[in-house]
Length: 276
Image 1 (cartoon, rainbow, N blue to C red):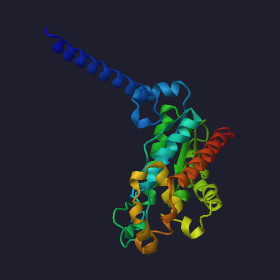
Image 2: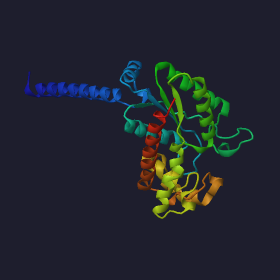
Image 3: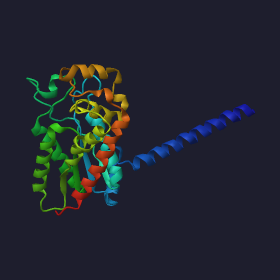
Image 4: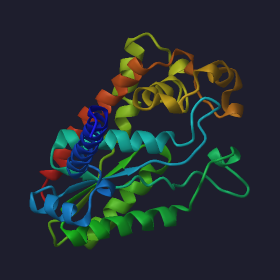
């Protein structure tokens, strides 16, 4: 066989070996993932046997975020932040994000339902989904189930779900923890950090302002449209914005990421050691 054909065959074999190596590497990474949906049922069982009995339930929401941010903001943030929290804990998994949440009355529309793309479900449906999720995890041996809510509009519902579930399992070692510090950190420590950098309350805002926008830019900048910041600032609530996103940047958002992860990890550790 001519040398050139041996060369082609050799490159072909090397290519196949490289692909197999990449596949093996990908499999190893997936097996070490903190995300439940990326594991097989056997791998989940193995993590439980290894002592990973904490599972985080990230709750997002599909709502409008002005002309400059995608409507999946809460879902993307909740998944990414929960993943960082689980990695820091070292013995936790992350459930799939709950992206369907109460967002206001549908007809006539209230709250975010006046803006295209928002999805709202009833509070009763929302609570029942969470209860069913927690009961599922209890069945398989998870002992610490944690609710992490990325939006403010359903925080009271999360507290109510945790209270109801814990009454059901009072005679067991299982607990459902509503960790309010996850959301509070985005309204407290993160806001304080932005103010220390010179941002005003009007810039920071309460929905889709610089705080919200910067946090998403630090996690997934592809979901942010900087060329529409001025439009968002001018439009106010008529455009779905309460705040001014023009001072937003990923560096500011990283302050929020750091605050949320640290404060939430500390809160979960404290909750897990509380008397049952």
